[in-house]
Length: 423
Image (cartoon, rainbow, N blue to C red):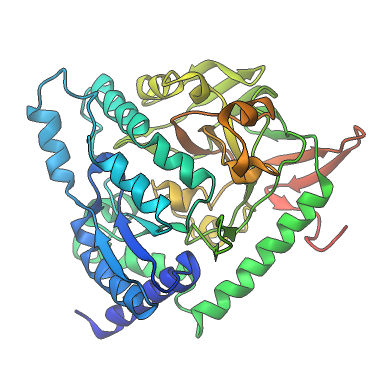
């Protein structure tokens, strides 16, 4: 392995363990990948080994990895019984819940082909996604309460790199993607840890500003978008850092450029159009728009992948409602890279976005202690799904509606127009 590349992986692992997870002495760590694909890609093995080393150096008692193989998933679609696609692991959900309830950390690593299942039956793809979502819903419920420290990062893989850099010679595609991940995760800085501490402080100032405002709604205007999203009383903006139930501060997404909160599930009205393709379940959904009335999707259109999108919206009653809204300036380093990553972790930090499905309970004051019924009564959405899609661009305008009805600008041309330190 190249010495410089090995040094970069060590820095990435150290950042993940110290800033992303803030792993505590005596915690265990479970490293997984997209659960529908069976686990973390084998191509991520060098990074995983460095993360394990960094975790043990931080005092971890045990590091475990759930490995997966995209080819095994491909074999399932070709050879498995046609009536078996709504089945999911019988042991994994219980193992995940026991791990989190034991107070141990979870890290997901994405290194997957965004087009892996593009030629498969939309019905079978949807069945696998829905079975997965139902199976891990109790685990995701714990994550939505920040029951423990968790994180999501990415690792370069050949199929993903080929999608991001189609014009680059194949031998260079993976290394180009690694270089880009390193740049956007600030690994090129003399002290990446210090750079991240500064960045997280800036995001915290932005969330403090928005939490003081307590807008009753946000109004979005952009190409193909004219949308009003109501915000519930007591909503909380979060950005960069989260805090577990036991007080561990961690940064769940690396990279991250967003500040986000929860909408009121019944107060979303108007039309929204995606500004970037959505990679969902090994398929691409492109050029799509959704019309909302009374919080619910009432119209679905897409240039590509419409059948998969419709099945997502129909997964359960909450899948047709919004559970998250996030604001990201167009000047985000990820947006300014000019790249389309076909990967939500990166693309959602290049553009403002919303998410169909479940809301995070930690985005409502006191939400972590609420039952599902109490959370829904307060305006929170409950669903087995949580799928982000991008709506931001250099043409997006966002206005905030204050509790007294006053309207003030929040973003113009995709950029913040107020300083994070203003009252």
